Length: 185
Image (cartoon, rainbow, N blue to C red; front, side, top):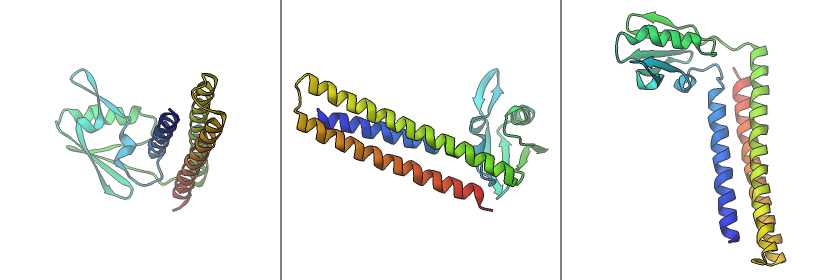
């Protein structure tokens, strides 16, 4: 029973770390990366479709993305979708290819992005602590039901705390790496 609670907590904390990595990947660092366009969707035959399913997205150089639609008629729709997105990107069309130059980040914009990253990291830490609270609550319930002894409950809570500390350290490592990435250039 205790091992099930610990395993569940570990799994959920791991998912929180993955969610944080996903959130960090959305925050651009000035370098071109196809994942910048992941949240853009395009109207394709009356249906909203992700950009990656209607076109090929590639990195031309460190500051330029290229998009090559599967169909010629999609060029205008893709261009409109990029302009409507809140990414602040200006696509340039060259026949069948759309080039997106990424402007360099200003120092002020970098500082703002660091604040966003720190906020996301804090949300990750809060999620991990909430999982710890849930696990400790399940342990206390098992103790009330007399399924486990007080010593087992205390030992289980210590293990949950160690697990929490480890995942919070992982959040800190991710935060440091992303912050260094944002401030370097």
